[in-house]
Length: 356
Picture (cartoon, helix red, strand yellow):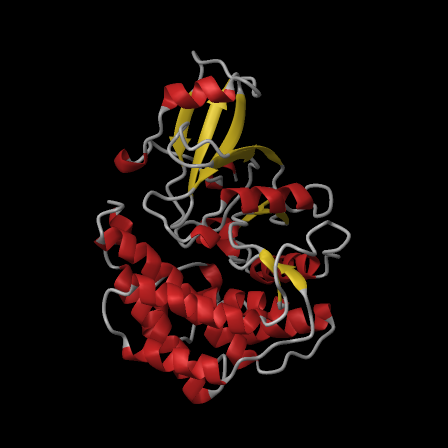
């Protein structure tokens, strides 16, 4: 399945880096040969920028914030590097970090280097060629849940991340924080989002559990073994923190589009979950509850918050596009995606269900 490994392409014009400055810097601690140095960009992803470095038959990944990003908590390279460093010897499914650079004079921002993990990433445009066996859908969904539960069961004291976040009042701060991010990136008035914000504030739910949470756990942030499709690694730890694990689950469920969801959600074509062979959100919730050995109260709150958070993430990207801070044409109609997630959140509130 090597043809399904994520492959980099030519760097987008407005996201080119200073090769000379970068090679001079990297040669101080990596085996870098300027004559064989090659820098490419992974075209997928909508947030932090990811590049491939090739030199002397070796490959590395470079991660940096997007141009024009002002939301530090979502683009904090030092924080992401710290998480990966703590996970390196405690969680088998995270890439190994190599170096962090806080000198913005090198490429215009801080950045870090990590290992490249070769494997299969499931996307809406490739999964049907990969999952030719219908039974694989349930296998991968089970792997998905197992990987998330394994993360949530990590002992944060033992791995040195107990002080990484502020678990007390986490849900309340998240609602407030994402509301502020929405207001700061707002480009038009969306009545459904206004209703969702009001409802979330009136229905804050805090569980007694505290875990390390990924905050963007979805299929296309997983690297699968190309031979057996087991999970090899989890990517994109930029929003990782400690807090209520069910907030993490809620976001994963919000990304999980069912085949019988409203048409406006199916049109997003976000990932593979809407395939008829794939387990539905309710089944994922049941698997998680059984494996975490917990009965989750008020799952609608966590699901609605996840939908709202995704809407705001997309709104922030659309805001940067509208302001001319990025020219990536994929972002041109993201305002419609924001509206779809807002409508879905409002529907879940009205029905008091995560499936309908």
